Length: 228
Image (cartoon, rainbow, N blue to C red; front, side, top):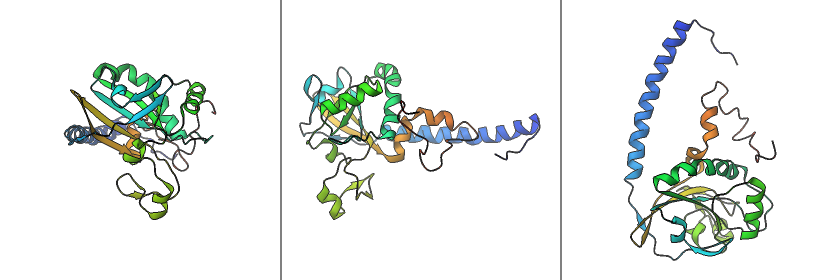
């Protein structure tokens, strides 16, 4: 690195200038978050069902006693030995965070197409405790733009992140938010690709440093946490 070396006075002047920009960005983010909260909802009428270690559950069951639910669409395909390192990076942050956000009326579950025994094997290896369900051959991941049939990929109909055509991967990653009011469930928000960086707290630490994320290509150093 070839940073300028300056006096404390010059550093303080530069820091105050950056602080003004940081404050402006904070206010912009506050406005964006408020706009996100005002997004319209879509009522969920399809009876989505999932398999878990204790049997079948519904989408409504995943809320528990809470009125809001975050679902992480974890890329884990049936029979595949590959564990997505990016999804695992997100998952590593969840158990610590949910100790807090569950107190603010938000439940969490991860969903993958892989069967329960495969999911449980990965869970044991990684030491995760959050609920993780199998959508199996159901429509859930397909309906929310995270899984794609071979026919749709070949025909250019596999659309991810509201516009990107997926040709090769049968699964992608993202987060969907649901709300329950009385006996009705609604979809309020989904984000994909770099939108998921909101959940990657380790990146926020790195972003404070001169080297930043220190990547040679996106996530070039990232591994499963038991492979470092």
